[in-house]
Length: 468
Ligand code: GAL
Image 1 (cartoon, rainbow, N blue to C red):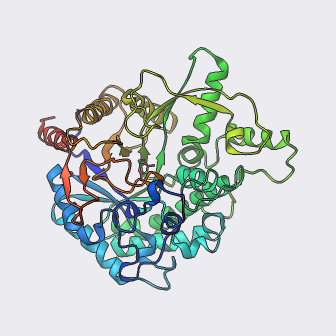
Image 2 (tube, rainbow, N blue to C red):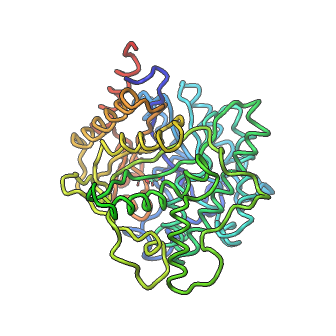
Image 3 (cartoon, rainbow, N blue to C red):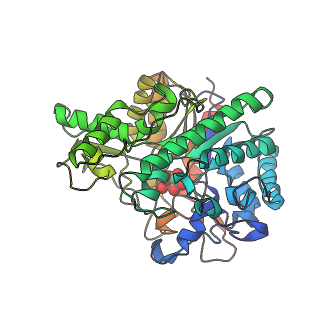
């Protein structure tokens, strides 16, 4: 069912696991600042120590080997490498750390997939406007080129930016992720735009200066739920679903994979809403400049983060305020038959992933796909024998198999989220996504495999050795 060179992975992100927030010359990031403000994170927790992977990397490596992963997805902390965000000052201790991680992985036959940016902007760049500022794209490009130069002889799978949707909306519209801005209706679109510009610049730099020698692949990780109309025959619900897709997956996938521009229905919904309230400024959705590197075609594969599904119906009408919610004008509902796994937003819908994969194949011209995140959380009392969670993994991986075999989707890998329990953003340590449990109450931060980890390892072993 799975090709023999299929990537079986698990993922983590720097801020969620590393700790060492001030170690060896690392600069602060927006997540350091955000978590140190009162009332931002569950229980006033933070990633100051987290899994302390900065000091305990060898323990992580043991977990990776116990699982038998072929691939490991990690992210680089921008502020650990470049404390003020610019290449004027390189923190060599940070470079040493990631060199060791990458070298150890390769020595153990594990292929690294490296995310250049996973939510943790250097605070120094936030102080200059962060992702709102036009110049962030060039700064990101320099940082990405620094990464290609420093690690690209060994890293062949790159993700520039993880989940621009989450950074833009949760960080700048809802204010529940760092940098905690609540500037509805304008800033998220600007941030998303600058993230696309930054991504495209980095991809072009790789393409023109590194690809020939390094022979790697570069993409950006796009998160999307599977969406379907609440009433399959209701035109309003069908249109609402298209609009919802346009504001989530389409926001980033259309420019990169399809047209070089935002989905038309996204722009027309935003502009119509502006007119309705008498907003007379330029379109709140920025336009791509012809003088800048083109966006279309700047991904060598489709990197998909999938967690859950939603049924969609038309919104209850426009509110008075200009915001993404009123622009989008939809309502998402959960099907009561879908089990909830841990955090309340995570309804388990394995078949949703298969449908989404088919949708991506049909909409974006059959790209090569890596599922760069998928997983299930635990909240409340600890359950080491997380049988139900593994059932979800098994069902989901079966659906991935069907997408390959029956739908002909060109899927090259699956990365479970996450290797181990870690700092789950505003939920702190209350939501546990790991294949390994981490005991945060014990100084040693010992890692212990969950039942789901053992079963995932068996599954990897089985598929790796199965004759095709
Ligand atoms: C994603 C994010 C990960 C992880 C996961 C589970 O949005 O990229 O860092 O936290 O969600 O919520």
